[in-house]
Picture 1 (tube, rainbow, N blue to C red):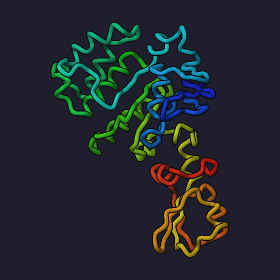
Picture 2 (spheres, rainbow, N blue to C red; picture 1 turned 90 degrees about the vertical axis):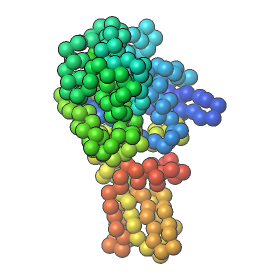
Picture 3 (cartoon, rainbow, N blue to C red; picture 1 turned 180 degrees about the horizontal axis):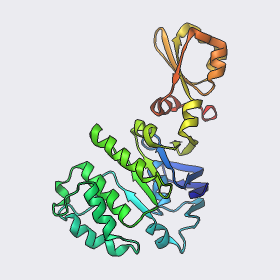
Picture 4 (cartoon, rainbow, N blue to C red; picture 1 turned 120 degrees about the vertical axis):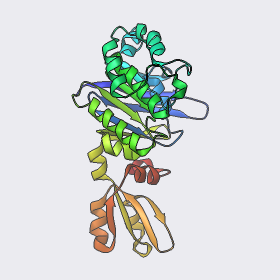
Length: 289
């Protein structure tokens, strides 16, 4: 499958933080979720993809090209959907169209007005009167109106009510049904990714811990619950991290078969959510993940 984005041994150094030898691929036609705690490196990675930062080491390609001598062509094909209003708040959508349309050679007024109608957005009201959900739809409509092939979304569902979140997720999933558009979706609301993502990239402390299909993640990681008297040195080696109380424990494992062999029906083994994985891998040794 073709890659829209490729990082090869990419590093970016800051005073207090660095990305270290990152290798990742974002595959064409899929929804890729990007998760990690605050400060893990998500924003830095997204800025590198957009060429808002330049790598100190390694190679970045978008659509098979490096940004040197190709920036305009690459950015014509990208749509960025922000988590907050980035428009002049006193302008309305007609004004914004007049400003943005000339910047894109593939701009389509028909697509613009079709999406404005589909998303039920008012053309003549100032952006400052829009709810956060409406602002998100506005960003998405603008991205789709210049036929963006690769849509990057930064916390698009944060702060939205549950009904609108589901509506937006259904729209996003539908956009990739024909495999011509690719979605890269950064969020703290991991349940949204469990609903629509094909693949998950998990970053922690500037390192990619895993990059797998959502199905493989769900099959590999399990949550184990039982009595603390079952814990001993050998079985603890099967756990990535353990949360203990006075009598009970919960632990994350990527070796459920070994746990079943050792403890059988003395424990409960459940599917781990992405939130569980993020919680239990925090501070765990990377080789376990």
